[in-house]
Structures are given as C-alpha cells and as structure tokens.
Amino acid sequence: ALLASNVFGAVVGQLKWSDGSIFPKSINYGGKLNIYAWVSSDYSRLTRSIIVYEVDQNGQSVNVAGTVKASETINIPSEGLAQNFEINASNYKKAGNFKVELYLIDADQNSRKYSLLFTVNKVPPVFSGPINNLFSPEGTPITIDLSRYFSDPEPYDTLTYSATLNDSAQIDVTATIRGSEVTLSPKNPEFHGTVKVTFWASDGTFFVSSNEVSVSFTEVNDPAQWQSLTNQKINEDSPSGTVIYQSLKTKCTDVDTPVQVSIISNHQHYELYFDG
Image (tube, rainbow, N blue to C red; front, side):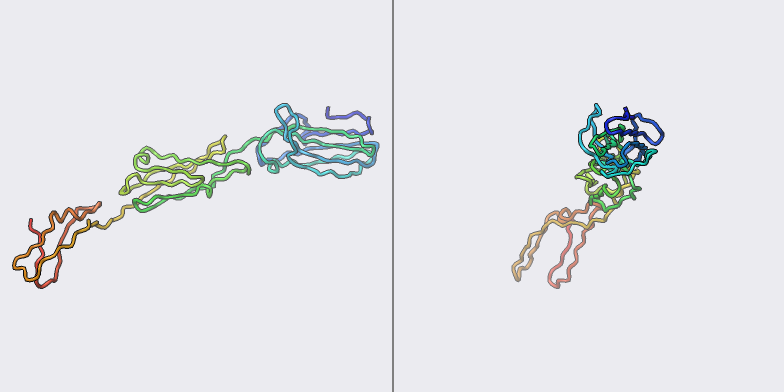
C-alpha cells in the first residue's frame, strides 16, 4: 500500500504521480515524469531519499539506476510536507522497467518505503539529413560516414548501418559497409551514370532511413595506353635496312574511343610510315 499507518515512529508517507494516480506509467526515453510526495510525522525531522531502481519483470529491484533526491534530512511541519520531484528518463542508461522509491527514516531508525513503477520505452535513431547527392569520377569509389547523419538518443545503443540500391544500381554498383562507413564502388571501372541509394540505421529494434541520394559517376576521357615496344637496330651504312613493328595499331588501346595512330619523325636519314 502507498499509505502507511501511523505506527513505527508515527511516519505517514504517500507517493503518487502528479496526476494523482498510482498505476505504472510508460514514457519514451528522453521523456519526463513528475511525482508527488506527501509526508507527515510525529517527528519534526526525517531523513529522506528518492532512488530509481532498475527492476525485473516481477518488479523486483535489480540495481540502482539513478538518484532523484540524495539522502538528506528534512524538516516536517505539524501539518505535513508536500513535495514535487521530476524523473528525467534521459538520466538512465537504457530503456527498460524501473521503480522510483521514496525512503523515509525517523530519529528512532524506523523506516518506510513507498514506490511507483514505470517503463522507459526505446526510441528510434534520429536522422539529421538530408544527405547531399554524391559525385565521383568513373572508376573511383565513394565513401560516406553515416555517423555524421544518424544518432541514437540512447547513449548505450550501438547503431548498425546498411544501404539499399535501386534495381539499376544493383547492376552497376556494390555497397561495402565497415562500421559506419559505406563505400559505393562501380562494378565496371568504366561505368559512368547516376544511381539511387537509400541509407539505413538500426538500433536493433527500429530502422530509420535517409533521404534517397543520387550517386553520380562522371565520365572521364582516359588516355590511350601503349604496350611496351622493343628497341630495334639497323647497322650503320646498311643500304636498305628496314625496321618493322607488326600490328602497330593494336599496340595502343583506348577504352573510350577508337585509336588513331600517326607517326612523326624529324630524322634526316630515315622515313617512318605505315604500310597497310
């Protein structure tokens, strides 16, 4: 019972929610509750404390979760003393079941306890976007740290991250996740175009999405690439020496456009040309 009889040191206490109820309350993490305490006693001074305990499913105390009011001596007027206190759910380590307890001790060390049960509910992670569209040259992966955009009001929660690619993006891009970092890589280094990606954060209970992000890989004009050509020699005074490089045009490739090969030489004794 929340109202003690006038025995054992003549201490009478009462603990209610500010709306006058005594039934268990439920609030979200970060929310607040107000409690009302009324104390009357034949003693003019009492020691009072208000503690919050984490409790199991049976309402049994597991451990101390926090202090609403530390132990202190209070003066009790003859008409009794009314007090109001606030419970801030952000002060506790995590969501769960709790009990707030008013503890009174008189000068003869008689004690009384009055308690109320309440539950702190988990809340979803918070997305603080939007995330701007992302750009990178073709062949260059893009890495984004999602911890810059997602947070969890519950400090002891750990967020995990994921990315959802639209259908076309799954064909052209892969997403690799390491901790809070997501790397988007083209499957083909020559891919250029725009895909759509949505990022997610989860605390194990809730999933929260970002805005849809456009990821663009811009076209790059890659230079032509030559294969290595071997050095060749002609003996001095050779009357008709000829140096031949077979299939010379195939020795130079360009991934973007067909190769046009030309030969330039200012040597006064030799002429360089394509034959066919």
